[in-house]
Length: 299
Image (cartoon, rainbow, N blue to C red; front, side, top):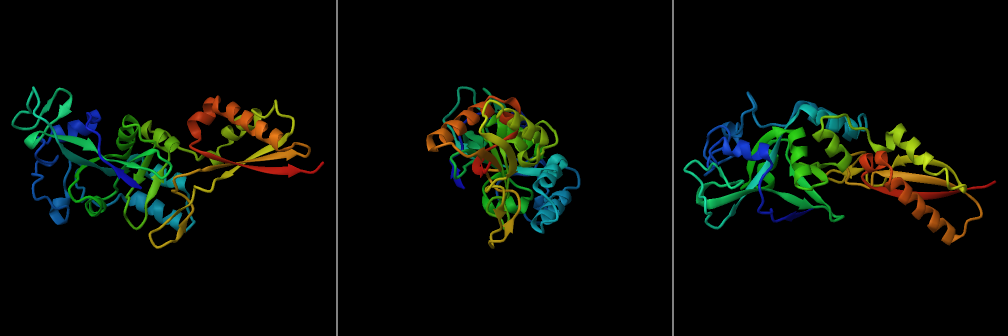
């Protein structure tokens, strides 16, 4: 994914508070950022008690199960519910403010300033489909390898999801640049931010019913089936395919149609159904992106 220059804008409150509480020039453990290494004892860079900066054990177990096809991506997202992650923050030089930062880098004018009037900004990425994504790291080592100059802010993953929503990011990208990167898609980001359970759209019976009901006004549609889309799978750096964690499209909608429709009729039917589905609240909340496959039913 392409990295975007971070926008000069106010940080989400919990992120700003974490930095402001550390005095700006230091981390949340009170250690200076200058010359910081994230190795060894320096990995303890936050207020999470007895945290050595390594990835959450529950998350690692869920990813291991997914990669062996013994688990699923819903379990990976569920493992993040209570996991600590690191959000990367980078400094941007700012013009002198009318309200200069105090000696310890407190907030002024809704912006957080540190040494030399540097605004702090979240990093966002540009996904291949043009959407905004926010990188999040499960370990201090993964963040350092990706961006050694970034300041890691330790938060629960639900808080990171809230940050993504406030930044207009539809995806959370876990550990970009590492041996394995897992993408949390928009419905899962929203569920995580609200601390709710996430069920993939392709395994959601309520969604299946809502989408089938929308076809009532389209007699040529005999039935509708939902399946994982072509974008559900992801891959490790070595090329091994993993059955989850891809950026989408995550939902394949199979429409079984009666014979007799010409190309124009099929196009009008699909366009009408897309409009019907987009007006459905369940669809809007639970579907990130879809692909439609047509099957003829001989009668």
